[in-house]
Length: 180
Image 1 (cartoon, one colour):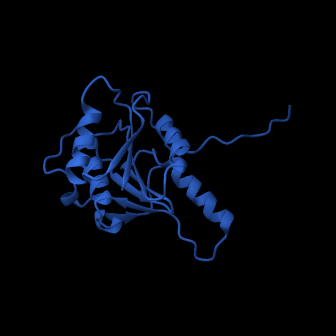
Image 2 (cartoon, rainbow, N blue to C red):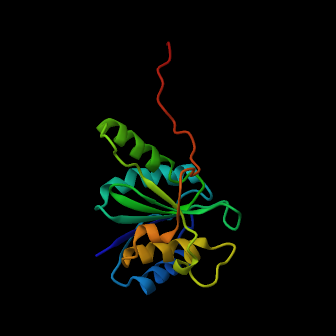
């Protein structure tokens, strides 16, 4: 049974999270949906990236993680999907996958495997995997949930969009030793 996780800044006072779950279950009714958090501070992409990075490793291989913390909703920012060795990630191209992508590159360099493949990042531009009508303010419902559900229902990852090599990332905090 496929698993889709949800991480948002929506809170639970309204029907937004439930609506996303309804879209997922309409497309992939056998999916198990797990809430990671809906209490990310509003528009705090860095917090969402960190929470995702601490939770995702504990899910079974093949889990699909949907993240909707999206201050740029309705703008020209791209919708993305990421495939790593263990999981899939779907959400906006705003840095929310920074820890995931950095962790993959670090793991790959530790393995030092000849020809080791890194993560694959897609620009989700295949509209047939979206809902028919796209609002300017709810891409979680109209783009990210349907794409994740189609992936859970067996659509091949590579069919969902066009590969890219320049996803938005932010520098990760690193510990540093000070002289004192």
